[in-house]
Image (cartoon, rainbow, N blue to C red):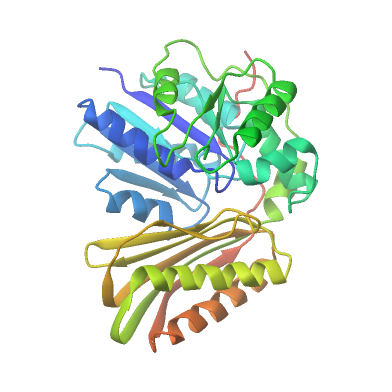
Length: 364
């Protein structure tokens, strides 16, 4: 059986990981062998830990995006499963990447050399920033970062308006109207990856057969690179120890609320901030997808523990040195509330370099 490659794109914080997890469960329920490939510009990726904690077979391309390390993508795919490619390959690219049709999908079809069914390429729209960008309002990001957001939608075979369970109906309708105005001809799906509402329409779209990834797109790589470089990236992992049991969920919520307050105070817009806590067989996840939306505990562990590993991934419109100082300060402040101590296992902060794709096939 020829494997099916499904890539789900979208801006940082759009809900790609939640969507990929729900898709994985859907295909596994149908008896399919499923593999997932996550992607990040560095190591210690919350998404990888999150998905593995849910029992999925996950490979990771770390240290560069799919487009700039195409060979790592294909080799990671080949390491999934047991001796043969999974029937379903779900790929989640870096949320600040675009031009993925020319640099990933077409090379998979024309260069990789192994047969794959390429599913329609879907891009998840992030409502919290998307509605302001599509309206032409200030989104908290510069026009260069908004350029990436728009280019992601431009190359999509279809667009998913996610989080409809959290949005007023009028906002959902406005988002669809704005998408139809700016990107005519693209099917639009309304769904909630969290609740499953509208999810059947997504799986129906992905099950379509045909030639996809055919949108020829001009892109200014100078502008693209400058937009990515405006975001400070931070990945960190710390080990937490406390003399008395503490609630893991409460610690994560306290930490992300502290980080949110500091970002608001310094006018540093969050593209996506994720915190995961792991102890024994339990884990919890807290998210911040924009300053305006505020933090949430997206996955509760209901666990009490004396020790935990805490991973912080931050993508923020801020200088990475400043971002690291902020995270270190608020980590110490949050852990002091449980009279705990922390050991920094890893801490990386940087700005992404200029994207240099391995392949770029941008002709019909």
